[in-house]
Every structure is written in C-alpha cells, then in structure tokens.
Length: 194
Ligand SMILES: Cc1cc2nc3c(=O)[nH]c(=O)nc-3n(C[C@H](O)[C@H](O)[C@H](O)COP(=O)(O)OP(=O)(O)OC[C@H]3O[C@@H](n4cnc5c(N)ncnc54)[C@H](O)[C@@H]3O)c2cc1C
Image (cartoon, rainbow, N blue to C red; front, side):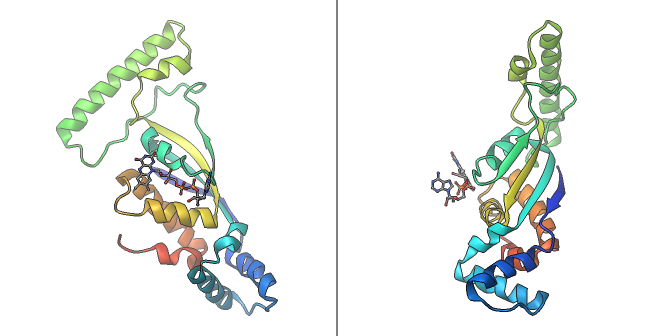
C-alpha cells in the first residue's frame, strides 16, 4: 500500500482558528494559541469549523475490498481507477497477513489463473467491463480521496479501531501519520494504541 498526500490546506490550523475566532470576535496570538483554541473546540464538540480545511490523498495497492469500505464514507469525495476502461492485468493481489506461505502460494496461483482468463476473454473481444468479473476482491486498486478535516476525523476514528479490518486500519494509520505532520492539534487525540 502506498499513501501519498496530493494536497492539503496550507496553514490549516491558522485557518481553522481564524474561522473559529469569527464567532468569538477574538484575536489570534500565533500558532500555539491557534492550537490551544482548536483543542478546546474539539473537546467541546464544536467540529464544524474543521470543515474549512481539506486534504487529498492518492492511495495505490489497496484491495478492492478495502476500497469498498473506504468509499462508504459519503462526505468524502473519490475517484477510483475504472476496471471498465483500464486494462488491469498487471495489478497485484493484496496479501492478507493471516495468509501463511502455503495459503499465499495457492492464492497467487489462483490469481494468475484469473488474470490468464481475463486476458483470454479480452483477446476474444469481450469488453473489459465484463472480463473484470473474473478478478477477485483482493485485486489491487488505486484511488484518490478528498475530505475535510471533520470528515477525516470521523473516518479515522472509525477505521483506527481494533474492530476495523487490518487493511483499512493500516490505511488509516498512514493517513493519520501524514495529517499529524500538518495539523497536529486537529488529529493528535486520535493517536495511540486502540
Ligand atoms: C468496524 C466496522 C464494521 C462495519 N461493518 C459493516 C457491515 O457489516 N455492513 C455494512 O453495510 N457496513 C459496515 N460498516 C460501514 C458503516 O456502516 C458505515 O457505512 C461506514 O463506516 C461509513 O460511516 P458513516 O455513515 O458514519 O460515515 P460517512 O458516510 O462518512 O458520514 C459521516 C457522518 O455524516 C452523517 N451522514 C452522512 N450521510 C448521512 C445521511 N444520509 N443521513 C444522515 N446523516 C448522514 C452521519 O452523522 C455520519 O456519521 C462498518 C464500519 C466499521 C467501521
């Protein structure tokens, strides 16, 4: 799995604090006072001001199973590689950590057969949108996801939980690491062992 930040609201904490101060008519006194204010807002549940900041990520090498879970988050925006138009025969199969070597060898074999059949169907003029039916849910995909900081908090809160599936948890951990570099006061309470 590869997670890359494409773009993020510059000086997001300063922007959020500035917006929050409109409602209080107070003056900012630098980054530390902005961060203090943001921590207080989050504690109070006054999270709508977080919607003024956004982040967009490109994610490659997650399974379609993981992508299906991520795209359930309706407030976020997505663009996913289309199996209808893109020839996906060079895509990998994502390996679950629970698969032992023997399981993985069998799965890889089955995947190679599926890709072989996919190629055969294409060569016989079957459209990609139909040939893809033989590919498994573990096949890797690629997508771009954009969300505002309030929605990122929501997604991360749900997907960092131990009850979440390992792959989307790993994705959430990588996204959290990046967001913490840019806006620690917004995301720091989501850090830690779950
Ligand atoms: C551990 C785990 C297990 C899961 N298991 C299943 C499962 O077995 N089957 C399954 O189908 N799904 C499952 N899900 C997915 C889950 O039900 C949600 O679809 C997904 O987490 C998106 O959450 P959300 O709707 O809160 O988020 P978002 O769509 O990101 O929405 C964010 C928030 O906006 C508000 N909102 C958004 N849309 C509406 C709306 N139309 N009306 C009112 N308020 C809205 C809600 O407050 C919502 O919490 C699971 C999720 C997790 C984390």
